[in-house]
Amino acid sequence: MTKFAVSLLSLALFSTGCAMGAAPVIPPRALFQNYKAPLDIDNHETQLGSKQGTSVAKTVLGLVAWGDASTHAAAQNGGITTIRSADYEFYSAFGIYSTYTTIVYGD
Image 1 (cartoon, rainbow, N blue to C red):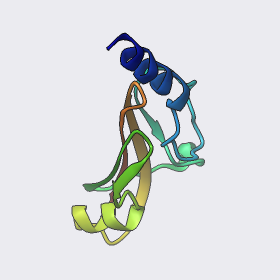
Image 2: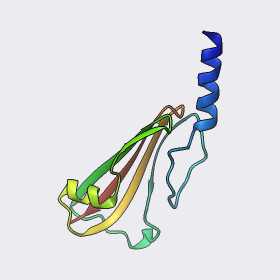
Image 3: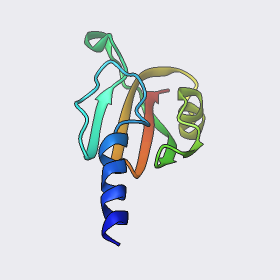
Image 4: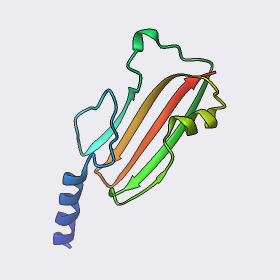
């Protein structure tokens, strides 16, 4: 049992951040991550709009992934036809389970 636990911990240490996508703000890697950041690069001109929509992609151990975290899916889920701004949220628990959520704002 001890060898299994050590192997699982080693896998978690070296696989953190594997499911991470590229974005303007990327915090440092850690065993447990939960943060939200902008996808916009023109924050001084940001208008949020009256609606919000989200879309999510998930992964387990970086081996199995599912979902659609596109801005198009988020806009459809929120009934948005004009996207004004976008954020993302990333959650990872020891590199075992991760979610990437796209949040769009608009009208």
